[in-house]
Amino acid sequence: MVTFTIVSEYSLTSPTHGGGEKIPGGPLYDLERVKGIIKDGTGMQLWTRDCVKDVQDLGWDNTNVIALVLRLGTSNYIDSEWCENGRGAIAGCDAYSIRVWEAVETVNRDMLIEYFVKFAINKLGNMVMTVSCHT
Image 1 (tube, helix red, strand yellow):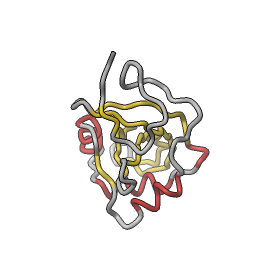
Image 2: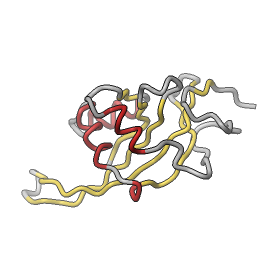
Image 3: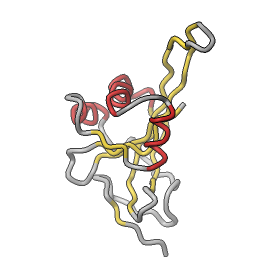
Image 4: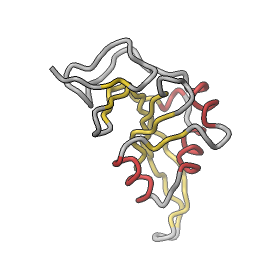
């Protein structure tokens, strides 16, 4: 049996084998509530090493991730799953995908870029823990 510390507000079920396990019945978090937690530019934590690297690879920081999440709508929801941080903690997360037209300097034109972002609200309800943010 795998033992993890659940750090997300969602804890109605428990994972049986760890990260990547789907959670039916999502989304787990109200998207407007998530946006309310981060709207002032705080309340966002890049929670995994992979997420920190993904955000750095994009040339972004927390403010860019916040701006992306603020653009999400309920139609962007993909699914929910358990995610590990690699240090014994696990969170029930919602995954979203959004397509954004952006100017891409290397090809000198606008392109439709698809971003994926996965996050959870912490147990205290005051922080959005971002697990991944990548194209």
